Image 1 (tube, rainbow, N blue to C red):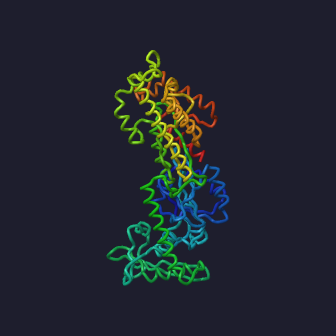
Image 2 (tube, one colour; image 1 turned 120 degrees about the horizontal axis):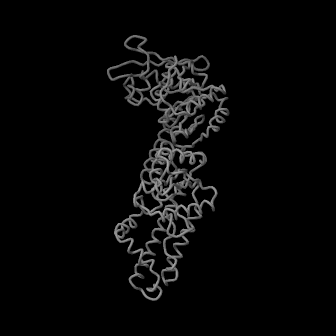
Image 3 (cartoon, rainbow, N blue to C red; image 1 turned 135 degrees about the horizontal axis):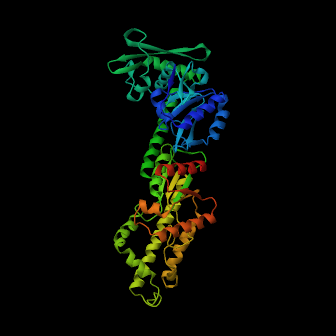
Length: 502
């Protein structure tokens, strides 16, 4: 049987065409309902691969800029012969998730230790076509056999119940069972293992829904253990290990919610965490793109977002409360601070002197907050998170692009000079903690004015672009993105730069 699949990411057809051309022995062990979402980059694709073709598989995926991830040790899918691979589609700014299996393992949810189904164990493959490319998928009979073998290790019922009802989480996988082959709506699923041993499992429709025979499930579990060389009381050990790992996993999930970023994520890139900084004048779409990128990468990786500015983003409650009070008078206060002419701050503490002191304390508070955010972003990256930073401090020029703000004339004022030097040291330390990837969003002033009318003057906009050019001259690794294109186009370009740097 062959089926034509619906819309899929272009990288899907390119990937499987390369597999076919190299003669890989592989197939997708997944039903058609979720297969369509997997090809569109909305769900996983479970790929069963012949062990001898693993090096060729890695070579093909690597040429398509694929990346492998690692998971925390107590995660249920951490077992030998299974890897998570991700293949990007730069034309759509998304990626495919491949659950690659060399020998499909079954067992308790957090104790999958029994390799039962390898590529040769699948009796029949059928085909599905994506843009004219044939993709082998598991047949109905083998799909049902795999589902029942998995269910056998996770089924639970009261001791006196002879039939175990299939729960809601399994009904979709059993929905493709063929019609009854025996009396009373009974269906018998057969298993053939090495050495000529066999096992059968009866499944029937009951008043409560689909149910499997308790004794058959127990015999199937014993047959699988014996086939894999495990005998005796391994069943009790499996339950104990499963409960310990599941408890650890649930505890980690709870701690992640209570203390985000403090622990390694469930899944992270094999090369480790990564800090990305988006920099640009107002109206370039930094916050919008930071939100989009965080959502895209958070689908499968540990991803966090950091805000280094003083606008509407997250920040210290003290700074935001003071900013709310001072905001209506900010222009008048700034003019008093900049007045270093006749009313000398070094000779008397006039009104301007008091405002200057308050401004210096305010600048140091902002510097401390930014320093804390920068250090936190790097701590998150060391734990394996991809950190998307909206803005990043610089120490090259005062008053622009989240740099120092204390005016130079306050350095000569007794008492304020210490605050000015403290601010300067903090920004120098932040400049040394560079992100792994810096992306500059640039465009014309007309674009900024269209998106945020009146937010910034042309002189200030040009000054920021000039400073960004100066930063790029000092650091050749900074990438430039044209922000005048649409949100989707800019997002795809940002995704491409980040992915290739992982």
